[in-house]
Length: 94
Image 1 (cartoon, rainbow, N blue to C red):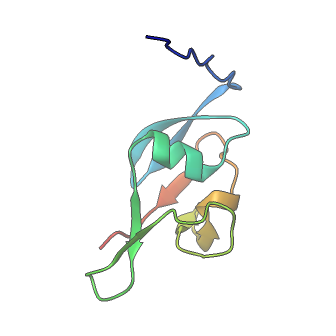
Image 2 (tube, rainbow, N blue to C red):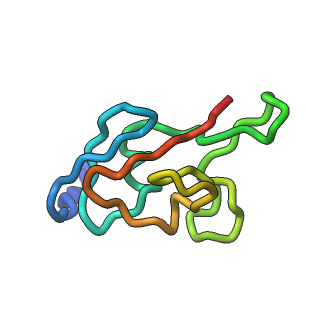
């Protein structure tokens, strides 16, 4: 059996971000989208009726499904926002 080996991706300096007061490890120069996925956070909000969870969909800023509040500023796209040390993110997943 031929097993393909994948080299790990080099990462920049480790940072700490807070998602709904939960401490999450992130890395400099990565998007909030990447940090949330790595932490296992998939649902970021619902569509308003409490029955349709929304999360990261397109990953390139066109769908607006990944809106979060960052440092008190609402409606920022997680896929277009770079992490910063000590950044505070609020997700409203119902």
